[in-house]
Length: 113
Length: 118
Image (cartoon, rainbow over the protein chains, first blue to last red):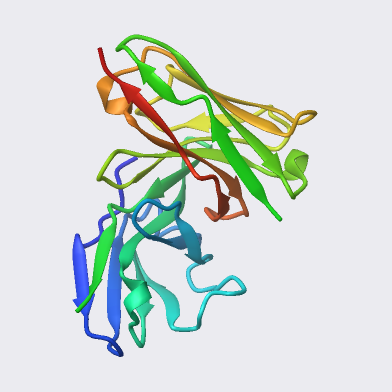
């Protein structure tokens, strides 16, 4: 159950786009289309942004989009806004020996310049 | 609206035990899978455990297996985490979270702090 790998940091100016990668293995991201993304502001609980790789819950702006290729999932934030400055985490379903498990990414701090 | 409210955190010495609770409301608790997720101060999220809706099946992260036990009381809409043989590395904010299928946590509690220190 190793954590998924994310870059520690990413940044962009207001209005620009930033893409965060989340790299797993053939046993998690590569096997299942069950990747979700979360935004966490300092001192707050995480908030769901994307589920099932690319689906947005109601209320999440369409500036947030998700995708996946092989063992790597990605979150793109378009039209960066000041309030997008936060930590972002990916999460994948995995199963080992029939166990129903989850694994998070290492997290990426997004800075709006 | 959905609410998840954790309680039971505090300071405990290494080797000690603590029981966390999470009171759920605003959704059909007895039909929902539930999780505990923790976050070490200044670090990332770590999935801890899942319990299926009927309480009969549970799974754990390797880091807590054999020491932590997740349970639920569907008559009281409450989720629990019994933590035994606590270690310094268990110090974290513990969140309960509602499962929405496929590795999706759609609602989170506000978190409760657990500090393991002598």
